[in-house]
Image (spheres, rainbow, N blue to C red):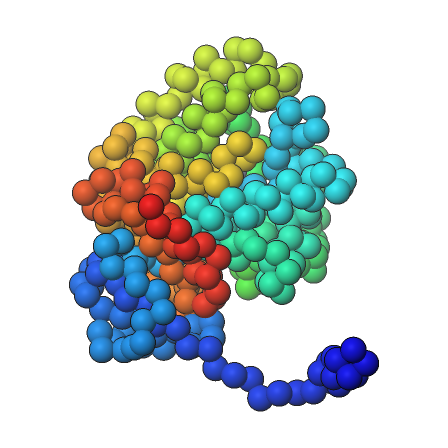
Length: 401
Ligand SMILES: [Zn+2]
């Protein structure tokens, strides 16, 4: 017993040469994340990365033939810490309690199990310790990018351009990966909540700090965010075709939602019902905006060069069901299944500035690999059947029906 303890103590200080962990995956159908399809090939993974695509590689550790293999998905817009509270009601980002922390960890686990290996959380200060714990390998979850505290547009009260610039720098210092800006009121009503000058200051300061800006915008806030030179526009209900064309011309990414968010509010109505944000009449209004959202996506898809990413706006009740928006996009908005997949793979990675790291299956990229029981090209509901999840070379899920 003593020798074991002594060995254990010695073991702590020893620096053993890092052993290369090599994994070979066999795939019958492989989507490369950029729109390409490979048949009957094998992936070689060493440590956290893909090192080769070689049909002759062996021995095979994971035989995923009969499934559809593709890069782990990227959700550009979630609220990873938002959960239902101890009373079952929507707690928004919640309090700093152990229960809230466990709920957030559960959201992260559910999201990873659903095939999402990277998410952008927009945002909460509570995202930071969760992001860091996952990055250290202490908790299972997707790679998280966070906005920490968003800039809430509230007219004059949002501050002078200089104060807004200071707010942006403060988020960077707090560990933000991206800046989130609320430039308009809610989905249903409300106009711009930041002046053009304020919005320009936020986007310009972020650019100076080397950070991306994601702007929550409806109606007239959409052209304002475009003019301010933001990186990506969230939601966008009320945008005209001309607004969408300007976004395409300026290379601004667009992140509309196709149905999961509204479906979640309706499904968990009793948990959301509460003034001032969710009074009874809000739910009838939510039903009324389902088809305008789908129409927006249909129109956006027809704008040449507009880069439409995949962001669900996952809130309490939606974590782990992030893939439902693929079904809405394809079934309800007529988007081609491959376009839908690429929006959450290589295009999603490009929007994060991470195209050289994630979003595709190619040598040198992180081994974020998932497999579906079924072929989403023929049946988009296959996105519900994620049976294999690897993130950074670590297998977190491997179940076969
Ligand atoms: Zn959101």
